[in-house]
Length: 238
Image (tube, rainbow, N blue to C red; front, side):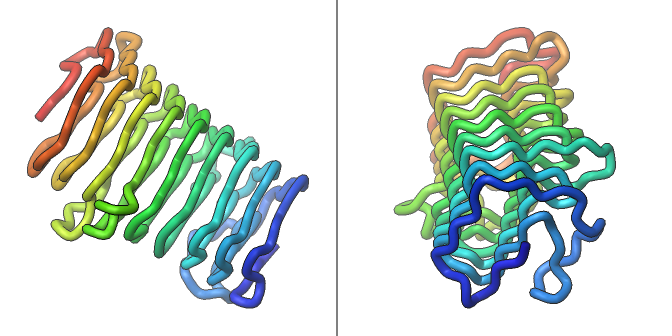
């Protein structure tokens, strides 16, 4: 299914999308491929969908889009992205099960207003959620939010992959479970600024290296009331 710039306010509901083309091409309408492609289509809602394809759902520049109540579960070892979001703002991913992909969620160039809430994100071979250039200074008033999720048995729970000084502002990471990732619960190599990390549980299960790993430039961040146990290296690394 492809929804283009003439399909604002569409609702995609109660269906399954299986085995789309094996490509990660982005981001032109003729080159993109996934179980569901949403291209320049604002306020699109994906509700109660089963996605099992090389890329489950791919959204490009589709402000206000919502993905909810869905099973984004791969049955093939080569499937790449459960959900891929590329550009611009105000995406919501809520109450989904996302598993067995290389990347459960990959988000790139989301300037503000990304909400990932109440999802069960597990057994993704590389990253539960991969973040690249997400959250510029606009996020101070419209933050990047991870709330009430369960990250279980991924390689990394949340992984911030960029090194840009222009992004990674104002992340609120609250009330999540990070359990038994192969490497770390939360990883950021550089620039983690104005983050609030509160009321999370980091259960290393004796096979997770760090609960939180923030290497450099973690300015004005708040950490409070988190619970840590059974990490193989340290609970927190700064």
